[in-house]
Image (tube, rainbow over the protein chains, first blue to last red):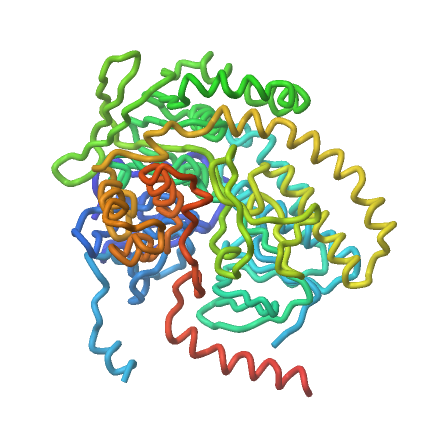
Length: 110
Length: 471
């Protein structure tokens, strides 16, 4: 998951360290980081591929407008990564293509 | 359903100032905000800014604390991390927070939903590694994170210069700042210099950014055109091409930050059905409002950049004006008191806004960003190009809702936020008419996706709240 050239962290004001999982790998983020910020700090770029052409994408606007940072958070797909803050134990997965309906979704829908 | 005198959407400068002013007048107020903490985008994370060194973001950012302090002390129901997905003309506000949906009833509604960055379409803008300048600034404020080198900034406008300066102060190595402001804009803007001189404080500040940046070691190139971003074998940004002084140049880049100014965020105001007009100078849509921020739908107000771009300080003052008028309408304040409060604000606003025509014209985006080349992706969600849109117009589409039906352009998750303006401009350009004539997408609620589970919780939550209120 860790690729080249992640975002760099400056000297910051005190905040708790938050451990989350990104694609199964542990990553220590800073309290107040959005999921999208954690992905960029972890070098998890691209963070998804598109449903139309499977082209790679990464967070673009960081303020809820562009929907490029869609990821799976604790099993829920299509979450705007920039709008959710990291919490201890959170499990984040990069999304490939369109969201798939799982058996669980089907039973719930019925 | 809980009832408030005033429900405010957005906790940026306009929302915070309006909430504080309205609570002072004795109104019951709720503030709904999408973010986890107040501040909006301009004062993002102002309650806990990440960078240790306050010199990096500068004084204007920390001015947000002067709004935050009275806001946190005011008697206001502040609901963070709440997504407002529908507002009705009957002034019911539907929101989701923590996976639960509910409705609030409001005597008056104030939209303080601010601005978004203008779409910056050019070949390769969808590549991982390309971000907006605003995004980089949000990362800096909330997390103290800076983009990896080699880093290039490209675009036009004060925010481009400010973020370049902030990253430079943060010790980030910037390979180049590429200014795409067209040469002719300087001549056109010259006509508005008189007004700009009345707003000399802002002008001096802007010139200050420019001199400090140019006096630094950062390489600044002006009148850049033909921007293209290219990918490596993994589909990530690896280099950019552009033309400067008639010569094509190539630079390696891991990060490219782009910016072409900001535009009002009209998603909610469009979905409510508020009247909008095309702004010839700001080249964007803005809702029609009166002096106090009231729209054509009685009882629904808009203050701040969401009503037309004026910047953070103007937004703060506009928020107060709306709050006083609302207090007056609800019988909490006499017109005499309202006008007495409003008079100094009116003068202040006139002086703050004096520079706008100059800035708006100077930083109008180059044609290549307004009506991009055929191979440029316009709709990032559905992957529709500018060439596709032009072909649809040639097949007879006269407006954005028709191109949407033809191709799903604007129908992806962002619901047109990233392509709406560009689609209108391409259609207008191809039809040789005006954006005002072409119009915009019909935006429908819910304006943000919500799960069926959230939607289903609405009935339960609204009726259980009513039951509590009746007891």
